[in-house]
Image (tube, helix red, strand yellow):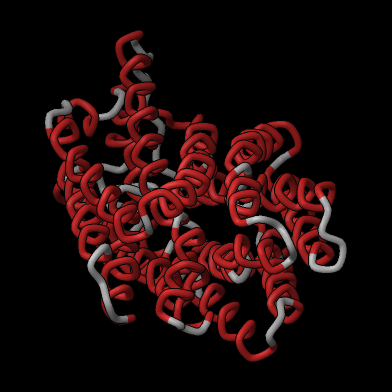
Length: 420
């Protein structure tokens, strides 16, 4: 496996300056990507609230019900390279519209599901691919055309959409379930998503896809001849370092995340209190995302990322303690530490990948790297459910999470390309 990077492209003599109109359009694109991410991640994470009523209603084991969540992550991860390729070929309108169409169909079908395989197909596979179609891969590529060197900050805003979606849809889902039942709640989700397809299709996507001239023109000039291909990226150490960081971090975080609400209820908290507490992680996530991205500019990538891992580990330890001492102080500490860092590394990893592998095939390469996140999320959530069923507790789940998170940060200790 080669560790040599491709030759630096020649610099252009003049770089176009940004115009006020381009600046305004950039923030419109950022707001649109944020809204789509809020919708996608919120709908995906809402399953943590639906988990218990669906499981109780059908009498399924934890591992069976968590397999649905695992398939969501797996499907999204495996679809990422194809989504990147579709974006490169057909542009954002087709990608985002297909995502909403798939999500609306999936939730409508889930409202009438009677068997586990039907949930696995709808909420698992279809929702997973739908979230990926309106998620981080297409958003990263699109925002890269508008924000250039400021992409880490823009991506911090987008990644914080996970928290905003959790904050809005977790307690909202719990209230809907209590008021109209989980089937009607899913039916309502599907109807809302279908309605959103209309305004999405009418947006000026040709303008949005063009990007800011002061960013896209220099890149086009520098990369008139492609430097990176997927096959070349697969032979570079930075590709596998990013892949492994995505994978092991996702295993650690998602071994816990799908079961947080159920864990808190088992620890003695009321269902709405548990859902609201975990939903509040959406507030602190925004500060965590922006904080870690700001640290990146102040102290560098490696110390910023390592700090985020240390805070995550502290949050996991507080969660473990909650089963013995369920109190508001530990709960607050867990939500602040774990919740604020659950995706804080994502913007920095995305920016690193786009800096190293930029070019005409960036969508395909970046999408392939993020398979690691999908595989890790799937394995972590599925393993967490199986371990809970085998041990009838959460201690082994938390040990798995801690070990995986520690392994996930190792590339930032040993791989120079991830430090800048």
